[in-house]
Image (cartoon, rainbow, N blue to C red; front, side, top):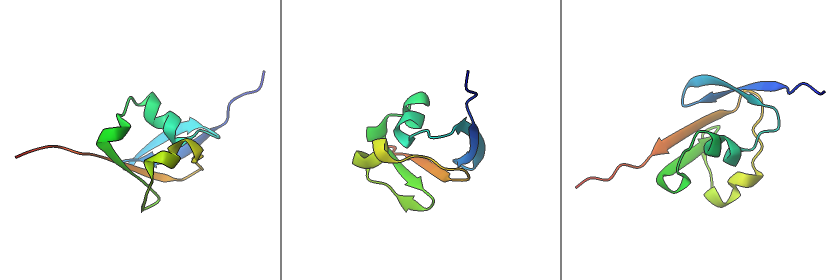
Length: 72
């Protein structure tokens, strides 16, 4: 049985270990984050949500997730 390799990323400023070759969309699904209600930044670049399923996370990536809050 092959052992899964873990890599370290930063998620909203906190260290998180994820499986190597994880896609960003999978991470968001695992965290139960509603994609329609957030903005996602990877290494200081805002991402197009339509491309999340193609983006593979790499060691030391920095992911920032910002939730939208309504008000009036």
